[in-house]
Image 1: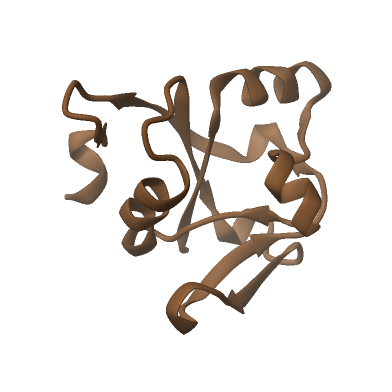
Image 2: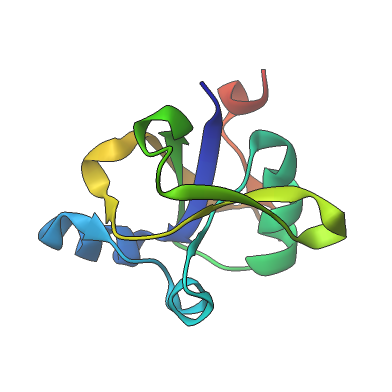
Length: 115
């Protein structure tokens, strides 16, 4: 089992919970897939694409729950990133964490996430 993560605005996920499916952020929809990251890619993803943004959440998924909809594709630096193709059932979320923006301008990840 591999864990992957989606970073999004809290409001996006709240809206998805009303319909039962997450279709992705504006960028995801434009790209045709939902961008995900592994734990090793997560900090760089947040600093590069979500710098200084508030009201973010971090959603954890187990890839074996949707292995047919995920593709591992080359992206930043040639790394393989998990990309989800389709509508993501919100019930597949394993855990949801708040991703608080600290007073120093950096996001504070849950302590237990990287242990």
